[in-house]
Amino acid sequence: MAAAGSGVVDGILRMQELADYIVPMAIRAVSDLRIADRLAAGPRPVEELAAETGTHAPALRRVLRALACKGVFEEVEPGRFGLTPLAEPLRADHPLSLAGAYPLLPADLRAWARFDHTVRTGTSAFEHLFGQRYYDYLTEHPDESARFDASVECQSRLVLRLLHTAYDWGSLGTIVDVGGGTGVFLAGLLARHRRLRGVLLDLPHVVAGAPAVLERAGVADRCEIVAGSFFDAVPAGADAYLLKTIVHDWRDADALALLRAVRSAMRADSRLLLLEALLAPGDAPEIGRLLDLHSLVLVEGPDRDADDLARLLAAAGLELARVVPTSTLSILEARPSPPDPRRGVRGG
Image (cartoon, rainbow, N blue to C red):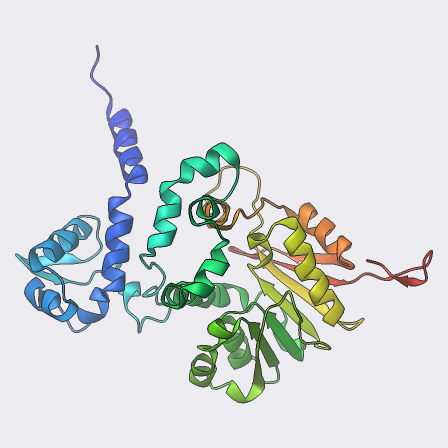
């Protein structure tokens, strides 16, 4: 049998890299330990890092050594490690910090360990294991909820950087960020548009962290915080309503209930902005395809395209006016449906 060509070997090595879960777990572990922050001033011995983090020095060395072979950190001399350009975003003070983006959440990992259930049934592995919905679980586990919120904050900063020039946010007047977490995205919009005012709506244990976020951004005086469920009530009468990566986490019945709650709060001239990952045809690399699987495993999030979203909006009394594609999320702008002349009332 002829020896395998270099292309075949390269392909096998690539497959090994793609199938590996060791490196992702190691990155999450050092992120939780804030190792990158501890190396900000320069390389340090692993014994010092272990003493500061309460870890086992030989084990920590093995973790950092494994990551160094992937370009994350470098062993500048035996037992002494420093940052690399690839590791810099793991610092908390990086402009696009990923310091909190990769928490080791045991419940998430347990759900992914039963990914086979999701593939076989199309239902949430998380609900199969824990007997409750993902966000209900987070409500009951505040420590894990806080770490989840921190990961969302990291993603929001990146999305803000990419989307703030894609839409005329400054023309909105007042915007309600529905399910906006701790307000990182909204705070960034307000900081960039001084005439814009905001309202942040999310569950009480989530918005508890919002005042600090708004204060750091210097926008606390232009943003109201409302604690509550968006299924119960949405602040009424704003110029615009924002749902950033919210609808994809809910099955049709729940998503429709949410959209109807927003529609009931809107004025006739209000607009609704959905920020969602719309997957393009073909095999081009898209982070949305990976997040789609994550949503399926944790919350049984449905696979919807623009037409599916348009149908949901129509059922809620809204019509899709336009779609603004970007390199990450698309911005879908919807407005209240015009009155139905056959019924004499507003559609929906």
